[in-house]
Length: 366
Ligand code: CXF
Ligand code: ZN
Image (cartoon, rainbow, N blue to C red; front, side, top):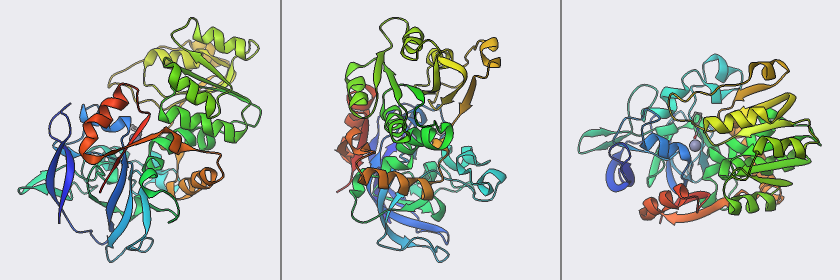
């Protein structure tokens, strides 16, 4: 079948629309007609080759759409189902078997290479391979072929074109709080970076009952939105001593939980220094390859810790329906972060997100 896709032809290149051939689904795969695809920061770092995707490739890993055809062995998804597409996992390694698919032993090849786990790609152009199966989907395209495992059914009465980000950025921020850090009601948290992942974390912290929720960013507009969506305090990191402000806000003792969503080493250092004794910093932000950070070792001995968190520790078929129920109840309005763009305006969407004008661009398909 022929589809139109936004192709990344070379490192850092703008997206170009191109017609590519997509294979029919294999026995364990689902063909999905894409109706929405969020743009995540990881698509842009893959474009720039911080993630080792084989180019040319079709990126996109926050797809939502409608099941169109299923392979003979598929049991959990039927044609006509509304679905969102999450990350890929093998289902057989020790971490997958323990219910930790975001730490799948094969996470890197399964998600970053633009190939299925057997090394093949479902996308071709003029007989040549085009990277497909990026995060098990490659959803900047009219259709995607996915393993059944990374397809999550969603109810028909929700706005399908807006749901894709739940498959990555939204569940990453929310899951870091609700699944990984698990703050007790009444506790304090500071979220560094008020982008879509950071504000998802802020909303989740409010759901968890945190009573001090501080958003830290350089952009006052983002901070204002964070405040509307659950932050009790905001700190503009360009105005003075951020760690000192956070200590003041917590009566001098430091914050119980911090979350680093920016990928900037100096910000990770602040997020650790802002912790009180016994506190935990969750690390989510994707840093440039080779980035290193120095930490105060004595500070760590006093119970402070840093935890890397992938995909919000989510088991997507469990966690995404929970977030959707919170959304229905008005307690997790992730749609407030979204602005839609038709697929042919993908470069404008990316530019707006890189300039900080749009928190979460979602591409739509006719
Ligand atoms: C992440 C997951 C962990 C490593 C880098 C990318 N996910 C998504 O955008
Ligand atoms: Zn992502």
